[in-house]
Length: 447
Image (cartoon, rainbow, N blue to C red; front, side, top):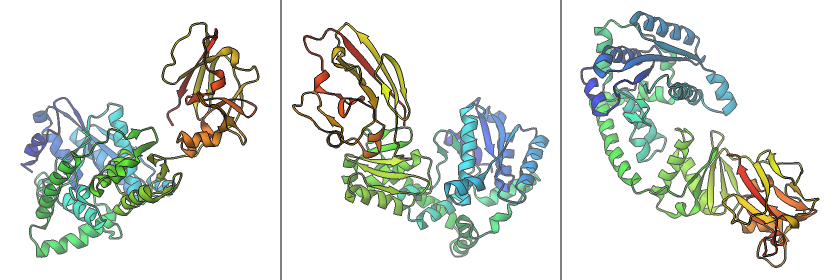
């Protein structure tokens, strides 16, 4: 594996002083990577630690973790071990076992990075893995983004030092250094898509095409260059990225299909989802252009897509409803599923700031209450002569239906005086005769 160090330097994978966590299952490839990086840690001026996860899927998984820990002890390598519940995650989130294990594994990696215990995670994918990944993505209906395969460095965290190294060199390294490793018995189970590619498809291709792996990888590098060029044409400036969802302007979906597909792939990667297929991309694109406002469709991984006026919202969309009544008063008022309303009295007239209303204090009746919309509510917004149904007002303001039940309103009977953080009624506006004011500030929860 004499070219691995050059590959690490070429792709700027490791910086001096960094702690590199090597994802190690105990298998041949990860043992070779762990041993190799540990042998050149002084050259790279880095620290190498091992990270191993027992997913509890196989009978021998706990023994494999024990093997890794003993190997690290013998090699004097610091190691972290974790117990994951991949079967439980697969059942609860309706994922395949492969998808659940990946989610658990990357959850561990992200935790280690966030806690500062490691700076990078080194993964043992090699040249043949890259060829398999590209072929598998193509068979799943992927476009250029999938055909480009895995990146040497992803998100500035995940590095793949062996990505340009063929399996034969890894096997030679194992033999030369007399390294022991464990065999995952599920590697021979061809019901797994990747195993079928690895054990059946690729050996058949290699018998007919000696350079099959390298040529597939070469093809992926061409795809990567083309994909990078197209991605540079994409402007994501007006996409709204919230905590649990992303709002994509509907106008984006009238661009060329090539651009729209990439926008959606970037959105799905925002939720750390790698297994979205072209059929899901096509479904969302057609939904955006053809569905009625307020429509919702379900995607795998508990994602929902909602058409909300000028936006397509993608994510963990929940239709929440809030209940309760709160007397209008000074001070801080915390409202579940909304946030905080702060009301202060003032004798000084000022202009309202963002997320603030200023009203004539003398025009707020004593029996006014904060509550949520009800049948029969009417509202006469600022500057409008006459009132309209609150439902019609929400429609006019293009407020998504799923959010209407979580917006507090200040009401007297069925007359709405304030729609929180949206608008005030004309009857409580400030005039030249106003002497006392209420400053009402809104602090929304990130939902």
